[in-house]
Length: 341
Ligand code: PHE
Image 1 (cartoon, rainbow, N blue to C red):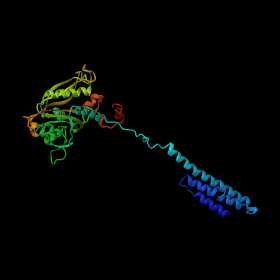
Image 2 (image 1 turned 180 degrees about the vertical axis):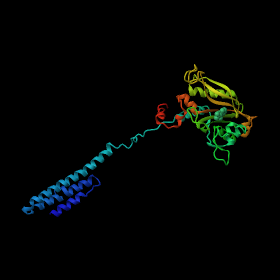
Image 3 (image 1 turned 30 degrees about the horizontal axis):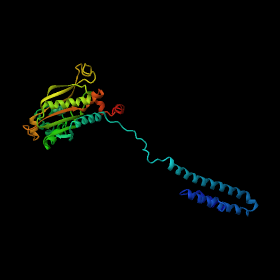
Image 4 (image 1 turned 45 degrees about the vertical axis):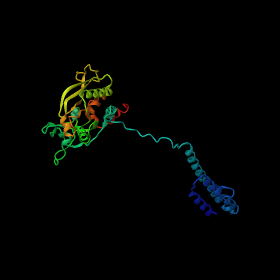
């Protein structure tokens, strides 16, 4: 009899059930009136008197062990079935993942591109590793121009000697002009590199958006109107612009554009050094030599180009004083832009 009790106990220790019905089968097998434990009880009658105490205790222990086990199995199914109805909602969104923030330069680039796209410009991109022709030669830089000096430009390797990091995205304009006949109306965003000592006001790389429009009868007035439209959308409808004569090898005439100071509204403050104006971009009419170099007939077509630094525009919009902050990845700085857009 003791053996029988032991066997049942071992059996029950290892039982598992696949569902509620299986648990019920087990209950019937062990605990019902016709079950194995009742059978033991029946046999108990024939146990000799001196063993009754020991065996009786063992049978009782077995009975409570089996009932406990069966209850446990039953509860396990009750919980999981309940959960499938009320707690697991498969249509719910997953645990929210904390989102990063957009980099201020990306925000501003996006805004610049959006404005020019709304005026009919399309986006063109090109390589950061360039050659002399696309960065300088085709853009009317004379062979001895200082920009070609190692002090201004990063050259890569010595052979071939003219592999370099682009110093402006005008190289993308050249690439488009070489392949496409006018009308051309593009904006070229991208990173550019210049061999400068890193400080609050200069870095060895920065970002630009340059623009180019070539068609028949494009005039300086068209350029001015597009830039005024840009400035007002970017900095507000009251913004004024002024163009000062300047020089670039690839444009003639050339100009630099200032906008009325966003901070003091033109009255003069520390930011605009008391002048009421801040410079934001370079521009001009594409030099006929550039058109010729890229296979476009300057007698038929004319065009304008402009180029701006995204860092500069971002500084103006968000009053960031130190250029280095844009590339330090300081999360406290980057997080400030979360609510901006
Ligand atoms: N490429 C010039 C620069 O990098 C900007 C510019 C572009 C000026 C087009 C005039 C016309 O500074």
